[in-house]
Length: 614
Image (cartoon, rainbow, N blue to C red; front, side):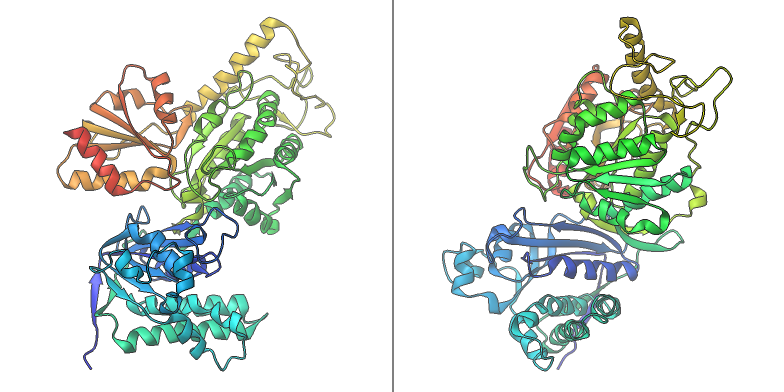
């Protein structure tokens, strides 16, 4: 029989999809980590259902994991998929709209039953015809039955056997894209071999069975390979945005020579940061899972007063609850990092979906004149850098910092070159160890307008902090109108002065032209890809992307003045565009906004940019 031909591709997008109990997140993670170890550029997008446990077999319960891997750095997980692995009809129906023309669909044939079709909302017993899949390469292996056959000698019960069907699907994809099984095998051994070696062996058998099915049945005309991406020399690992954030905070504590304390309350999609920090007792990290969001931030403020680098983590609803205590941190001028992993709102909203709608809350969501530094990370890997930056600015300027991430980059992953800590600067908080001549005055300031940080328990450094206004020097309670005016302006000037301590704003592409695309935070990958494609097609388009939000970096006005049109793209209804209007009123801003709980697609961005250029 003729052997399948191996064809080399530049990049591929695969979407694994099934019920929330089908193990699609693990399947996608093992495939993407294997590709990363082979040197491919990767970008992933885990897409969780909003319900904790939606009815099995329904579209509402579909869980997906998309991975984009290629022979270059991948900045986003791809708009549409080349391959869809659907473990049931609901997964097929939910993801039909994300198929590329001519895509391959792998559907578990055992799931095409009247019950599954009814639960998924199909009107007929022919899902392929109903979804108009005639022009797609649809392969329907009986994945569940073949998994049972492969594992019949393991002694596991039927429920445990069926749980391994995701590994059978993974084996098919390993063969289809010329991926080795070794990494997945090592993972299974480390996870199960000691506690439950039978389960480890069953999952390995399922991978091998799926691989052999794809290799021997010739259901696929070709299999494919993707060459490694060129990379800067170094040691790499795959990392998610939440894990990178946790590690960046650890790095900031190390460089400041202070213990890290995290007081938080679990909330989707930020919980993994707290979980990751809880693992780092070896680095002296202390964590408290508080009873609620308010307690979480209050324990962190107390820890900051006691001499810790203090952080608290949350998402939009939790940031609302933390707002009063965040004002306390501003008033007491204590360093604190608040990580807000944004999700769809308002209220409980879309807990597992991404959005950028907390910007106004981060900038203004407190009573009184209450400015804080606001940063935003752009990708899973650069969450490390901006978490470090948040810690540096908080401790050196003695003020709270809000670090904005979002569900897309927090749960997504990409290769990350592990940095050497010698390449990161020492963080120098204005710590006061002994009382100066004349006595300690807690609100005497340095050149950054930061007050001294005196830890309790040291003779001569006794002082008090609290929510009532303080004297501009002594720190005693003051209701003097002139003093309050002075302190309000001083706290604002301190935050504004941070502009001297952050990079000047830059442009991706030409420094002048027809259209300037403006974005911030986690939309960077999609915006940059869209701009790059437009530029290759000969259009005059550049990108100005922001990570430092308050204060805005130097050079923004000069950049904006060199473009005929400006379009601000964000996953909200225009919060950053309105913020820019406040600061740079002389420019006219177009907007492209999306609130669907999903990231932008490159296709829709290009359509918008082309319409503006016309």
